[in-house]
Amino acid sequence: MQNMSSSKATPSLQVTVSSKQILAISLPIALAIMVPQVNFVINNIFLGALSSEALAIGGITGVFYLIFGVMGQGLNNGLQALISRRAGENRVDEIGVLFSQGVIISLFLSVVGILFTYFIAPSIFHSVLHDTERADKVIEFLKIRIWGIPFLFIYQMRNALLVGTNQSKFLIIGTATEAIFNIFFDYNLIFGHFGFTSMGLNGAAYASIISEVMGLLVIYLVIHYQKIGARFELFKSFSVQWDYIKLILVQSSPIMMQYMISIISWEFFYILIEHRGEQALAVSNAMRNIFGFFGSFTWAFAATANTMVSNIIGQGMQDKVIPLINKIVKWSVGFAIMVCLLLNVFARPFLSIYGQGEGFMQDGIPFLRVVSFALVLMSIATIWLNAVTGSGQSKINLAIEFLAIIIYIIYAYLTIEYFQLPITIGWICEIIYWISLLVPSYFYMHSMRWKNKKI
Picture 1: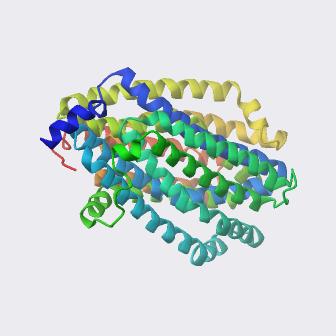
Picture 2: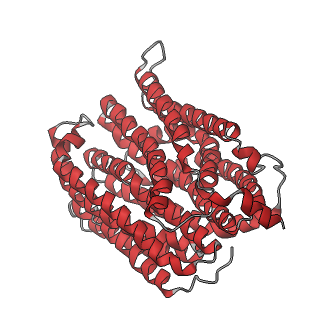
Picture 3: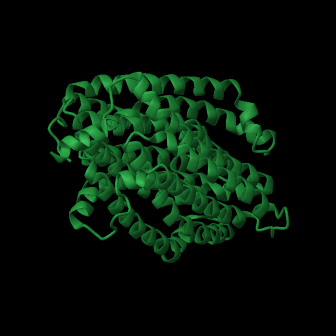
């Protein structure tokens, strides 16, 4: 009787297999993802104007912060799959409980991240970076920047809720707020305008924390005034419920580990690049911005695949899953090819925004060719990999990621460090990585072994 009433009250929580539904979910997510990536690009433009060393340090610190950021993203993806499954099953009363337990887990993880940064990270950076002065600056920056992680983690939980309940249109409000505050405080705290003290590189860390706090505040105001909190009883109780904690961790922890080893391998890649000099590191940091900014649509379609696959399975429509994935792939590849063409046609204008001169652009254009092709492969691989997440088989995700990372690290080490080949050859590891993710994900979903998985 309770499920019947839930069905009548919230019919819109069940998705349909259509291009209209795919775009309705994915385009707001794309905009929400793109806004913080604009922040990263603007951060690096400001840091590039400060010095090439600041831009190089921004690459190392940015990837380190991402290691903890993706812990929250992994928790978000697992929670999103659970919320989407409950939405498809019309078990709406469980959504608020899942959300509150996700917030509790995220707060615990943020404490772990802060303690790690203060007590373990300094030894790691001093041992792996060749330049001691640069290592000191990296550590000083991160000890400021890491205090934004609790706000980021809780902010990410709103992704799981809004995407999982088909309300992704509200995502852009919080991220737009974050972007505005980040740009304002970046400009003023890095360079000391409008009466602010000039903090240089560390000003970017403070600006990012302020923007994360404001983004979190605004999105929870939206949740309150749109009655989303009341509808799902989000704030009814924040007492620990161990059965839900266990359920979330069983679903999310393999994805969190998957994302962490992925970004740790990227940090390893940047450390190898650092051994080849400041210019190579600065150019590679710009390539990271390209992946983040121009990959926004791809990650949006991947999140859509996660939530729609889980929702469709919750409705008992397993036979519609593969046709749904194929539709999402077509949209994702279409956007990626447009991005690839734009990057290759306008390579010099794009690289010129970093203000690093002709040598930077000459070195960067070959990198850009490789990265743009990797983005097309990424647009296919992430959809199939996130479909595995949506099916509830997060342990399979972890196994696929682990295999791909081993291949990635071996290739990167041999080309960049051992054989000292050109950095462009090293960046081909991105192409190899996405192929290594695509092939097993594709065949696993077609095997239909996920068909009877309950979460």
